[in-house]
Length: 170
Image 1: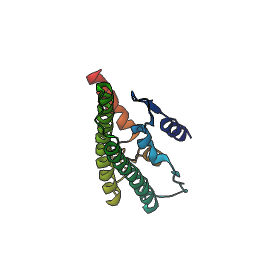
Image 2 (image 1 turned 90 degrees about the vertical axis):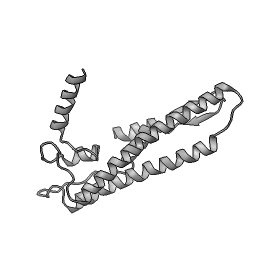
Image 3 (image 1 turned 180 degrees about the vertical axis):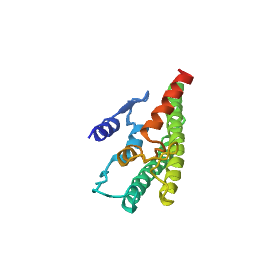
Image 4 (image 1 turned 90 degrees about the horizontal axis):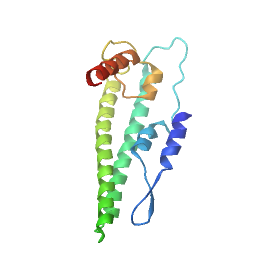
């Protein structure tokens, strides 16, 4: 429910440009959260083996849908930049457009890296090596993987890594 409310909030953001036109700003967080739209949590049954064929299929579908959504966002950005590219006579309008394009390109670069990570994760699913902590080897857990399908560590190992990181850079 919270993810759905967050997605609704993100899609409702708008930005006013110096040209006076109002545009909907599809933020990067909205595209990242798009994996949770039309998402049905996996229903565990008693005695079910961890990362069985049904679970692997479930996560493969989540990852594939997420990747597809990100790829569609890339296509929209290219089309938007081609359609909106203009040589404004006013330097302020030109600067605004350049800044908007710069932000979009940085966002797409982060999404490109995320797509690469999703592809690596899909490969793990296909090799039946998905769902286990890279650090300690225990099960990451269905609900954690549904919340962050590209997770490679269990909650405990990730928490330890974050604490170490804060001590080093804190």
